[in-house]
Structures are given as structure tokens and as C-alpha cells.
Length: 122
Image: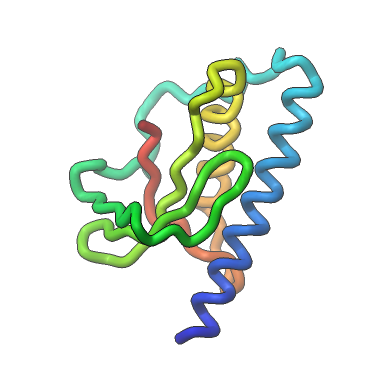
């Protein structure tokens, strides 16, 4: 079981690095393309936030755009990524890029990629 945990942490780190590279490209382009990333209707991958319990004392990983914590959703142990939205200049870009990442990740099915269960955009 420990081997499975290591694979999940590696996958989260790699996805975080990919998100950072993607966001850096958006920042350099002047942020003009972010409007095309907006998602307005509720997506299949959105979770019910009332069923999510986050253990903020159990930090799994930190990155430039947020932190990953241990949590539970419907009683199932999950990793919870919380974006750092404190910088107003990059808030919309980060939120839209993360929404795009989650939309793609939700549909990925591979034994070496951690399965995305659900996401809470707020």
C-alpha cells in the first residue's frame, strides 16, 4: 500500500508542475486568452462541498499555486488541492486554468495517474 501512496504523490507533483508551466505561459501572454477558459454551468466533476472534510493539519504537498491536504469525501480518503487565490492579479487565470486541468484530469483513466473523484470550484 505504501507504494501506491508514493505513486499518487509523484503524480500530484507532476500535475502541479505542469499547471505551473501552463500558468506561466498565460501570464507571459498577457492574460488575454483566459476568457475562453471560463466554465459557467455545473460540471459532472463538481462535488458537494458539504460532504468534504479537510484535515488542514495533514499537509501532503505544497506548490507555487496551492497546497494539497489529506481529506475525506463521503467517508472516502482523498487528496484535496486548495488553490492560493490571495493574489488578485492572477486569481481569474489560476481559477480558469485549474478548471481546465480538472476537466481534462476527470476523464483520464490510466493505472499510473491518480483518479480525480470530484472538484469544488469554490
